Length: 248
Length: 306
Image 1 (cartoon, chains in turn cyan, orange):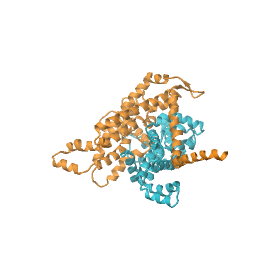
Image 2 (cartoon, one colour; image 1 turned 60 degrees about the vertical axis):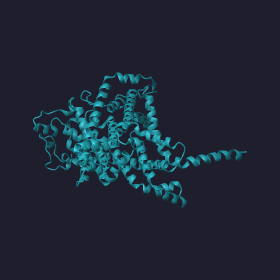
Image 3 (tube, helix red, strand yellow; image 1 turned 180 degrees about the horizontal axis):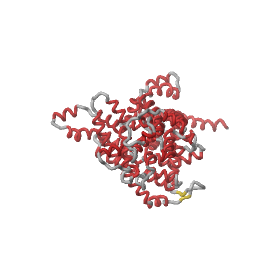
Image 4 (cartoon, one colour; image 1 turned 90 degrees about the vertical axis):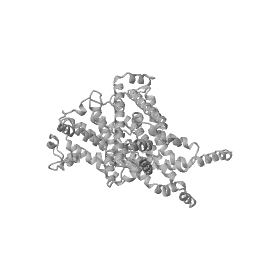
């Protein structure tokens, strides 16, 4: 893909296919930015993914801490109510979710792209496991020093949960960056599109006269951030998968 | 007297506050979010699956007619057949390949992390980019795949435009994209098997093949169980590749459930039948998961102690 993104149009359609570009055509990248609002797709993707990640970290860690540290009637039942949402395929609620968004007037807005993705049971499950494994003594000491439960959570428990939070953050970021079906449904105008949806529309709008090298340049740009995030936190990410998966 | 009536209420409030106050503060935000964006839509979807609604006016109750309409539609059955073939194809190939790779990589060789990363990259790559590259590889005129096959004297194949090949081509792409995830999990499972049992097996004269069937597979069965379950659920929900490459064609040969559902809802505006299909999909996944959990006891080692 990287190779094709640097090819001339003639070279792309040569047969047998060329393996490497000659000469290097960096201008395909400039063309990609000029011909399509690639920059706005990119900004949308970054903004949506970051907001979704931060929001999910906050809500999941709060709920996870609540389940891990407090006792209240029917706690297991409440936790089951959370877990059951993991078994529902997203396609079951995607149609009515669209109409919920419509009543909120959130179709084709950032809120519509971000807010439904803020609440996930997977993160609650993962972080609860982590909080359960933390020793309680430190938190009890903080309580004796006069902290209320929120302060204990924010200043003591959360910093200790950092590895699990990093794993979840990478997980959510990648899922959000790559998510396709929901952004496809909820966005209508070109200015709201995220990268995957934007590139897909780019492909279909050209159809027969597709400028492959420009498409490949756009795809390369879409992969770079995810690659950076993944390489930076690979260890935690893979450990996170294993924690969420095998120990389930 | 106002004071005497408020005191019991106040103490009741205080009791509720003591039991529920902090847990509610922590849990309620997430729970309400799930309520609005999951529980309510799921129930709405159930209601809509029993209704006629053309997006204008109020939905009308029509009983099971959406379900019977869906079940009488030949395209739905073709779709279901494709979905089953797709699921069987992807899951079997994916798990087999992932297991082979995991066995190959489960050695103390240098640079193992690099290989792991290379095989994991497709997992994190957006499907749009993967589909673009593969669409180009599959291109009947300029694609590498035909170019390579031509070296062996194979006639060019129209891959995605040929109803005999299209579903297979999508399966191959999906396997390539997904196997890294399973590989990482299986690799962790393999590394959890204590080495001393292999040593004693070797002393008893077991060869590599016997060790694999009698030791590795049974010891790995809990991990394999997880991998198969997750892969099955994911495969039933495949959408992106079909949307991007074939749109269900040619002649519905790659029409799968979720894409057909999407098309009915957002292109034909048949909300009722689309919701009915969503629930049929849900029931299929639920039934399979339950069956798997039942079978788990039989083919997964050591699960009895759980």
